[in-house]
Image 1 (cartoon, rainbow, N blue to C red):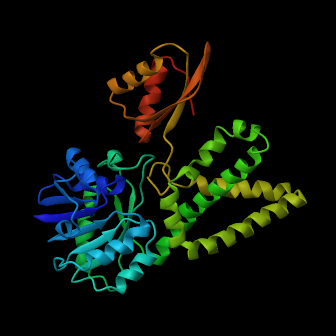
Image 2 (cartoon, rainbow, N blue to C red):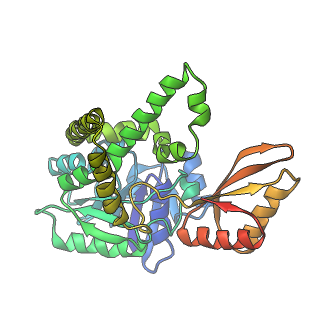
Length: 363
């Protein structure tokens, strides 16, 4: 029996647990320092076994997944490596920065274990074990960051185990990983936060900024609502890469300012054209660092039970609705309902159903 210990059974850790649980020859143990979380893991059937004791979870484990915040990774690594680990045990993490934890692992006595950094590049608008899903990683990239000293046998074993996730496993050097995710995820989060706070400042003197900042503005800045503590740790951890990226972003912004000062219509068009061409070449339906939007809007009359009817119809047709929000509803005036789904396929099915029920669908 292969024992898999998961420290931190939230969205990512819980989804990994569900990918492994019930597979022949695999036994999944969850760990949390909080007894109420341990009970929740068991009650929801996410793991085979759960404990609040670090040594009990790690004992005889063949694989240890550290699914804790980036800021807590080194603390857990140090604590686990003081325990009598099974020889050849593979320790891996799921953090979105890799260079620092890889560097720390190289300086530690791993007590016979092997460390291989990992990063499943998928997420959800929800968090916690309640949001865990065995389908979370399907068609996503799962990055592993072994180095030249990592035994190939260990890399093969971890890669083989992760096949149960349905993800595409890729091997990337840790520093290169941090540069790439810094550009495609960490920098966009900084830009979104800065932009929202800039508009927030304007709105303190004019309420129209907040009133009119709907639709596209809200959508392109949605990542500014990400967990502040999680992102504090990520950005501090990857700050060397991000400072370089921000300097380059500043140079690009200054170049655009110069183009506007000159009123150079040709260069403005060229900037949008080249950006559009590159963006059109990006994969649309592959999961990535920033969660894709699978949403639609429908106009709904202010009638009793109308929202319940919509949810019931979606449920009857086994279409999984992940979120529902009433944007506006006034007496005798149609309101707007935002419907969110986890997959493009579910959104497509929902649109066909709603249109067949004579609802007007918008995007």
